[in-house]
Image (cartoon, rainbow, N blue to C red; front, top):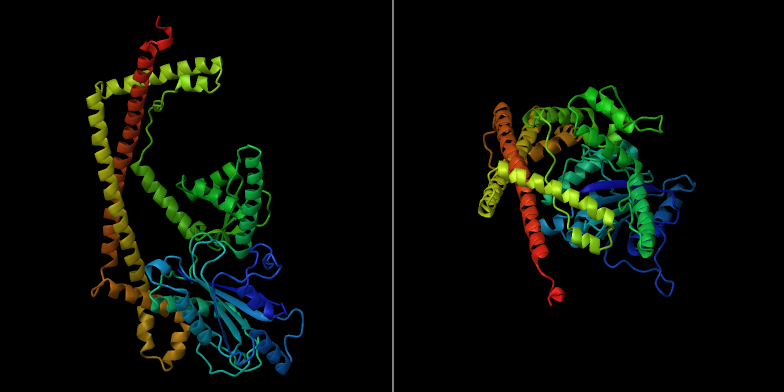
Length: 520
């Protein structure tokens, strides 16, 4: 999936932008990394081109434009805009994306969307997170150096006239997201709908707070390891990430919104409120609520209610037993090994009682199931393993079919929703303007059409039949999942019992063996 991010800079040193793209910099401090002679180190790999700069460098082209039009002289003036287009790491393996192809896409993207601005287009093979995501940096001077032809996404004369500054408005960002989606579709690259939030929302500020916190934690753990101590925490969590996990933990075990909000307050002191159909959360120690949009798409009202309804269905399938559950069968303790390792006589007394209780539970279990012989036990374990594997395979197959149906349903809903818009396009006076006004809608509509064509769907299925089929698959999956869990639990118990039997008879053999040094 390709994403686009925007940053603006008020730094009057235009050469700093090119320096950042070509030399190695500390990702936390932003300072250049120097070699043994005190000189900046070049990046291992990058591709760089400039646009609208003529024979001058990017920095000189921006300074000439500023002097010509008498702008960008104040400290508060935005001097450059920095856009980063990051591609899916899987594109390099699955779709043949190379740095050269990404650079070509970036150059064309810059020409189409930032015409008339001096620009640097630079491609790097990887990002800060070392995920292998090829990404393109596009840095443009904020001042346009020539008048360009008006494009459909340009609203005002300042968007195409020379001497005017680039405006990064919400409408412009929306246009750029759609442009990235269209670019990836044409290049056969992985892409998601950038107009809708996907999963957890991690802002730039939170991302770097997590990176800095993880770095401090790694240094502290390294000191503890050098001192022979075991670290208690290895992964750093931001406050927002802790909040997300606390809400998820409650959401996964509740079935009504009232229970969800009450348990959040009871277990974690988190208040939740609904305002104008939107949810927001307030952790302890804060007075201002945090909207669900800033936390995660999954914590918005519609997704929360969907999760609660799914919990109700799951609870109806797996009913908790009213009878008191017996203790789980546990493994016997190797007393001799632990005593040899330095455990005291008190531990030995406790371990003998513990083993006696676990051994009696093992015998009761095997007698109840009629597995008093070794062959019968092995045969039952093999049968359960087969049942477990078969049920799991069916669950995975049904789950894949449900995911496919859900994807088809999503495209079908989008197609039906925007088909009247596509039909209206044929009758309007100015089709180009109309299409630009509804560019995002046409983008997802065309994606749905492409999906139908790729899957050979000439006749679209009925939505109600799809929902009925999905429900049938869901019920079937729940049935096989119940069999899978039942076989898994019994298999775990019998394997533990088998280990206990083997450990017990090994102990008996050791106790009856005569030590060689005692033979006279």
